[in-house]
Length: 571
Image 1: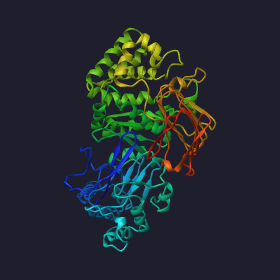
Image 2 (image 1 turned 90 degrees about the vertical axis):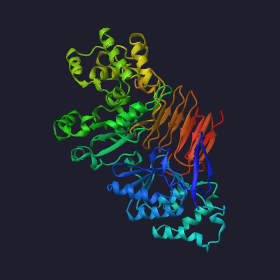
Image 3 (image 1 turned 30 degrees about the vertical axis):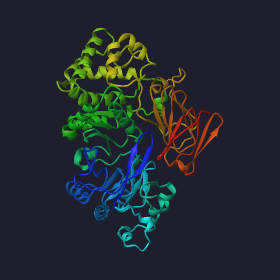
Image 4 (image 1 turned 120 degrees about the horizontal axis):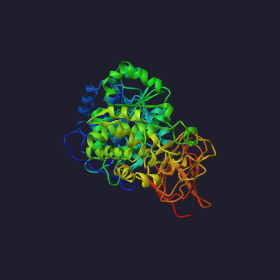
């Protein structure tokens, strides 16, 4: 017997059941490359179907990583061997491990049984939990057997051993047939106590305490840690001090993810893998004095500091916060610059030598042509920094000046960073066209990565993605394609001409996609929402309290739910 469901993603989710199959005995993998468990700090991330060797895999992972206290189940569609799965699940309980479903996680069938073994069970609102009846090799389904049939006992015994209500077992049998799947509603998740507690804001954001593996100097300095995973499975590290807000930490991580996202013409695999191999790290300090103090102490001589880049909370402006919205001043958002420095030094320069050479050569051209005009002393200092592998700082500072200008960060000022005169796209085209062409070799015209709008963004206010000369911040926001409101304020979004991917918050929001083909994303199953025409748009109401609220949609062509998509007719 097996409890497994195969999930195919193609503009939606096509669900099909799988019959029993022989297990090869090879390690479970995701895409044939990644082991079932990948450990980051005290978390073991689980991806793939559960096979007959699950007990051995679990024992091997925990023996090699005794610090692991949580299994984070990302995509686990079920088990090929129920007996082995239940044994492994009991091991999870005996080892006192927690289980967690992060944002956009999917577990189903035997994966759900495995999840229930956690001594603590934590579920993100966007996660999907699938259940259905099991079937044996002849196709007989559990729901068709009498309740007294002995085949039920293995599951009932398991639920009793982990202290879980056995009525859940009967619920799963009747929820869907073996060749189908039923996604649990928020009401059913609550009814059966699937989660033992709510996720914290940090857990929802995949932000945790600094793992001890980085040494005491790091754990003493920083109180939070997150990362971006390279294609080779290695982590690109991000550390934050106590005065760095969660929104600021996520702004930095989102920016790194943006730089490492493939474009239509460029694969970033070599860059990201280089950063992972080198142990690239972003250190977000409270301020400049905190950074100086750390680098002059024990931490400055540590191994992780060797391949790092610093950034300060005082220079991270989050979309929608007061500093982001304000007119340009002497204070500036340095997130794009500092994260790009890390990406270039640890990724581009070591892995894309031809691109690095183009940047370095064009920097000299820009200096000669007075397009870029840093102070003489500053330029001399930059020439002395760096090495052959990472490139000297002149190329880094020039590339950052061009990229910041390209994405509108200096358009409302007389010149750009360090006297860069191509401080808007139009001026860059006229004065530094070759520099702009280099940007296009690595980065897209618009930013597709979802950027969070700060929870402080005022109720009744609209965040605009279209340029408006009366709103200085739109010189930057016009290049965004995807944003998400956070917090609980009844605030709003107005899109631009791009194909926008938009998300609201717990408040009641007005979402106008404007031009393009636009998608609105909510947390929850389609059955948990009412969607009705409302004037020239649609009203979407969440039946679950304190989750998505009631939102007015205009110029939105599609709603994306956890389990499906809904195409909206033209109003």
